[in-house]
Length: 89
Image (cartoon, rainbow, N blue to C red):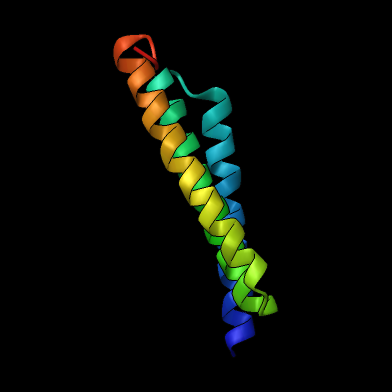
């Protein structure tokens, strides 16, 4: 039962990633693209976590942690760039 739920969740997350990629490519504004990129790294982190649960391996959890850290920093940098036009002052 758990494996069927994980497979269903994997399919849902992959579908969300596809839709986020479409928004990233055809987003009308830069803010839409940043939001799509932010959601895309969250979905990637969730995908790694679910694969870690399914395979029972610690490496997926470490990869999810790295994705979360890099995604958070990149979102802050992109938001600052959109607000001020520069990242490093």
